[in-house]
Every structure is written in C-alpha cells, then in structure tokens.
Length: 340
Image (cartoon, rainbow, N blue to C red; front, side, top):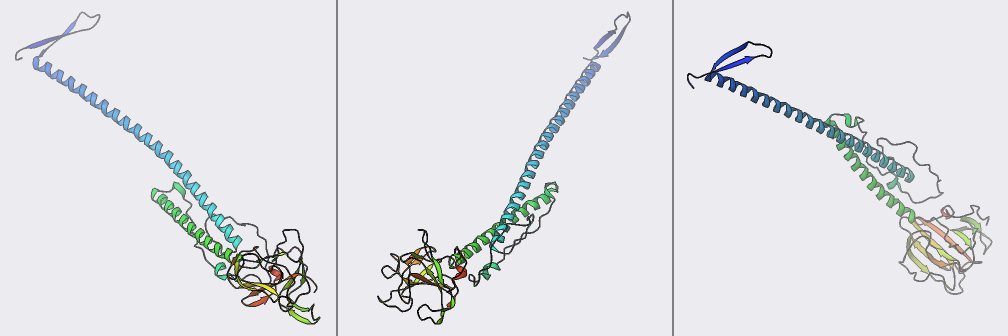
C-alpha cells in the first residue's frame, strides 16, 4: 500500500462547493481501526451497564424475598410467644387449682381460675411433700422482637427454645405431682360407704364419740358412726385399698362388730365396716389381699354382733387412731347429725 492514496469528497445539499481530502492507505486504516475500537468500547460499555442493571434487579428481588421471609419470621415469632404465654397461663391455672407454688414467668395473667372448697375437720393425710414442691421459674424475656440486630434475634430464638424446655419440664413435674396427689386422694376415705343407687335411704343413727349405749343405756365411747338402712343394702369401699381382714362371727353371737371387713388404704388410712349381713356378709370373689376401688361393693348391711337392728357401723383409722368419719362423708346429702 506504500504510495497509494485515497481522495474523499464531501459535499452538502444546495452547495456547489466540495471539500476534498486525500488520505493515504495507512491513514485510512488508522481511521477504520479507531472506529472499530470506538464501536467495541461502546458495545462493552453497553454490556457493562446491562450487567449492572441485571444485578440491581436481582438484588431488588432478593431484598423483596428477604423482606417477605422476615415478615413471616416475625409473625412466627409473635405466634410462638403467644403459644408459650398460653401454656404458661394454663400451667399457672392448674397450679392454682392444685394449690401448688405458682410458676413465675412472662405474660402471666392475673386472677386465674375461681376456686371453691373448704377445709375438712381432721382432713386427709398431709401432702406437704407435694404442696411444697418447686417448679423451675422462667426468666423474663426481652421485648425487642425481630426489629433487633441479627445477633440479638438469634439470642431471642435461643431464649424461646429455653423457655419452651423449662415449660416442658414444669409440665412434666406438674404431671408427676398431680398423679401423686391423685393417688393420695384416691386412697383417702371420702364417700358414704353405702350404694344407694337403687333409691334406698339411710340415716346417721349414731355419731362418733360419747353416747348412751342402745344396749346398756350407759355412756360409752362410740368409735365410729352408725348408718341405719335396709338389710342387704350393698356396702361399698370408701377409697382405694387392699382387704386386710374378713371376720365371720359365730352364728347367733351378739358380741362386737359381728361380721366385718377391714380395708387398708395406701398412706395412713384404714376403714372398718361392721355388723354385715348374716346370710351374705361379703361380695362374691372378695378375699384377704384383694385390691378394691372406691365405690366397689365389698359386702351387705346386716344385724350381726352387738346390734339392735340393720345398720352399718363405719370406722376410719388414721395412723392407727380412730377418728370421726363424718367430715369424710363428702356426698352426704344431709349435714344434720343424729342426736343419739
């Protein structure tokens, strides 16, 4: 290309004059290369801008997704706190019903459940080991929620799991104590030991303590209460227990309690059921060592032993000492005692 040149004419519309340029081959190649570089640079710049735009869109989409996930996590966090608060309230209500120490924790509503009741004279066996039991307390939570920095949010989540674990432990302890307390209550005499489901009636014909004997007309100590009712009325166990004695008196004997049953209840209680029926004193299948449940038929009312008529002589012993059974007749329909 050495020595070659190219002429370029430039004219404008409406003008008769033309401009002429002479370019050597090397100059023409230089101009072409410059234009090619400019075009390539423009293409690269456009590609870079497009890439930035794509990255920005992707970041915006990811940010929107994170915002949605954060909102969902915030809702889950609030729901979890509400659930834990609800479990805490139920735990406290049950503790109040059972008379157990109140577990302190966050968001515990005041008041609890309304309760009724009253103390029983010479009441059930002591349950201090249950009443004084302790349940783990729950620490006060932070109120920052999910608006806090990520590391604090992580701490909140860890705290909630710890709270849930403590509540779970408290509920397991409560279940154990409740079962223990129910076992104590099941083994505590608490009902009139007569099955009156057939519409029969009874009356307390003689109370516990000092009285005039219907046999001798002299003052004596009466070790139980007498429940006068029709002969053959089913006698029921006053609480869960085990049959410890079944005594059959000689036929025609007018001494002592006649035919009677003794039940040993777990804990410190025993009960005695005397003057049972002469023809059929005990329930079928009953024997010493048999386990019985409250309201289970164990015998039938009669007039055996030192008795003036059909009735059940009922005694309660606590730690081997006879006590007044009347406060333990919680289903007795008439709280007036006999004057005898």
